[in-house]
Image (cartoon, rainbow, N blue to C red):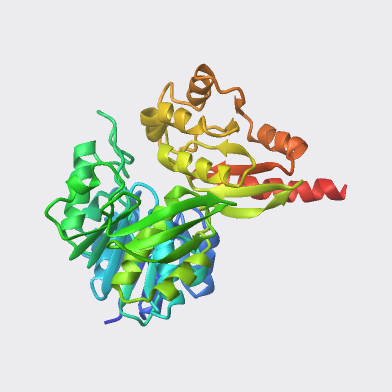
Length: 460
């Protein structure tokens, strides 16, 4: 039956993806957000009415269901108006779970790697002709964006563990890349997108896994196997005993090559054109899911070789003065370290421009950020991107800078003015550099600004 869904936070990567799927399913969609953006513009081009800001007037007489993103508070006027009219009010991830339940669903979770892994699985299934429905936390070339409605039997979805409700989603196949203490609050300061403590996060992962028929998990990740014990498991990794194992791994020229072994039998060689050991593990998860779906080695290995990361995941933007300019979403310490180690396989000088994301995360992790950034040849630190969070007194990017200096890094600097970091790179970027912008905030615009400004100055 056709229904009218009004989606709050419709400009977000997750909510906008659901909007596309609902439209293709024949539903009526409208939405609102603080500001319109490129994602909401795509929906407007498809006829979706989108409002800026919050207002009870958005809940028109024909709205049947109000969908809220994790960040939306119950005190917002749309929520109050919808409940006052007796309408159904659900969270984004609840809607995702309902849509997944109608198909052979594959849900991917993990503190890091879930977008790249989801993108790989979606790309493999699409390129191998299975026509899946997909909702991914990034824009993927193979599916034409961050979502796709397919006629095939599979529904591939990235599940965001920052929403505590994720534990109630029931995929047929659960893929768990890793579990780390991200999105965990600190005592006395728990906010949206945070679990109350590490134990609560672990319980939620365990519950999510228990909901599935089978759990595909990374056996290399310390403690994950024990967390999942007594469940129906399929393992992947580089360690001995993995069901799907990478041997003879070679990381070179910004990519990787390895020998695939399935349950002790050598199958063939996998070639990747995305960098880093972490992407080897991500690809093994995709291999495990594809193999279990009956896709032949020749097909999924070819699809992985042609795979290009989702936007903002090792997103090569271009070159300036011969320097390779890359944007990456890395925003917790392990992601930052993995991205830097991947960048080092290019053989270039690794110059990182890092914008920390969220005050509460930095309060918990600033020393680990400093440790991760030590792997870069040069680090330029920008101010924290709050993502709507209130600042915490004494928490700032200078903490990371001072820790790195104390630990012996000789090329780290905090820039209170973003423009100064940009000017420095415009002056001294060289053909031996890889410039990697990192973070989940508006740092994503920095590399493009560098390329645009560079072309203008070159013309002068």
